[in-house]
Image (cartoon, rainbow, N blue to C red; front, side, top):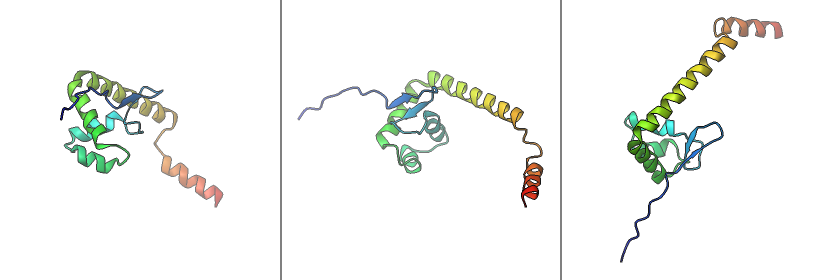
Length: 110
């Protein structure tokens, strides 16, 4: 019996917003890497995200380990973007006084 060794592409896709997703699901590479770095095994990640195939999780982790500088740069860019969005949302929708505004709105209705 012989076995054929064939390289398979990583199960990663980039969506329209530039977010890398794993295995044709909505789960992001960010999520897999964060869980892995927190010490989760591929099996534990699979339990938490049942839409993912275990092989795709291992492949995503392998991709991260083989391309760490590029993935870290991508993750840093995603963190910067998230911070910009958070700041913009706080500027537009000031979090201060939210409770008071909601209570006032409730009193006006009631």
